[in-house]
Every structure is written in C-alpha cells, then in structure tokens.
Image (cartoon, rainbow, N blue to C red; front, side, top):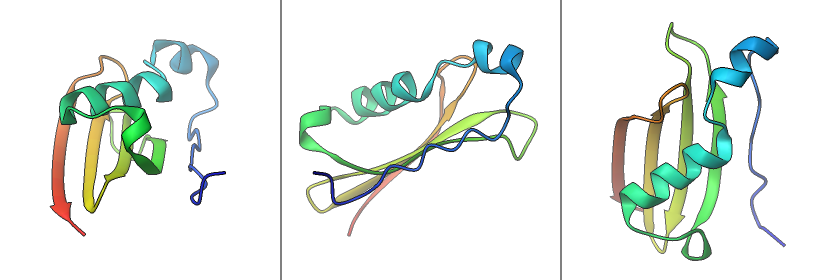
Length: 88
C-alpha cells in the first residue's frame, strides 16, 4: 500500500475541456521521462490539474530517494513548463 494518497482533483468539470487535456497519467509519464526515472523508483506526493491561470497545467511532485522533484506540465500539449529538484 502507498504511504501517500495521490491528490488528483479535477478543477474543471467541463467535458469538452477535459478531452483536450493529455491526462494525469501522461503528465506523470512526461515528468518521469524528463527526470530519467521510472514509476517503480518513485513515490508520488502530488498529481493534480490546476486551472488557476489561463493555462491549464498539471502539478506533479514525486520523490526519488531523498530527492524531491516538482513539475508543471502544460495540460493541453504536455510541454514541461517548469521543473526543479532538491535534496530533502
């Protein structure tokens, strides 16, 4: 069992908008590929769709060992908009 519950709130319930989005699983895959790690090696602490600004984006946060990775992924095209990593 996972020690963390993954937060996966969908802010917009608009079905037409949701169909344009890459999806939370694809956003996680993009972040993992960018970091060069696999899902077997990490522990996700956040994965959610944010629609605060005009650009819908996924906030992805995970741990690989003692390193915390934070990603902002464009929800429509999968582009990595921001990323950072730091030792916890």
